[in-house]
Length: 204
Image (cartoon, rainbow, N blue to C red; front, side, top):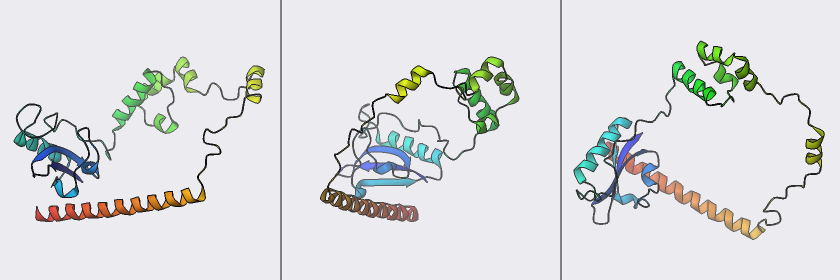
C-alpha cells in the first residue's frame, strides 16, 4: 500500500511531505527523525503514481523554505522518483539485454538459470572460444602447486577478535530483557499506527 505522508510541527504547520509504503513515514530522514504519531498525516493512494502526484501537489501548495515559497523543508518539488519495480516481472528481452551487458563488461559469473533466459544472439556470442573459456571454471580439477600447499599448511591460525570477551550470565539476562521490552514497544507502536491508517482510510 502506497501513501503520501506529512510531518507536522507542534503548532500544526507541515514541515515535510514525502511518499512511501510500509514504515517509511516513521523512519529517520536527512532532515531529522519522524515526529510523534499524532503529528503525522497520511493520504492513502490507490497506487504509487497517485502517491507521487499527491506528494508533488502538497509540496506545491505549502511551498519550500529553501526557495522562500513556503514552510516545507523539502529540497525537491516531489514526484521525481519513478514507480518501483518491486514485484514486477521482467520481460525476456530485458533479461537477455541485462545478461549480455554483464558479459560485455567482463562479468562472466552467469548462473545456469540465467543462461536459459538469454536470446539466441547472446548464445552465439557466448559460444566464441575466448568467451567460452572464461565462462568455464578454469580452476576446476587443477591441483595446488607445492608452494601454495606449503603456505596453506603453515599459515597462522585465525583468532577471532572477540575471543574470550563473552557476556556473563547477568549481562545476557539484562540484554534479553532489554530486547524483549524494545520488541513489545515496537509491536505496540506498529499496532497503533495500523489503527490510525485504518481510521483515516475509513474517514476518507
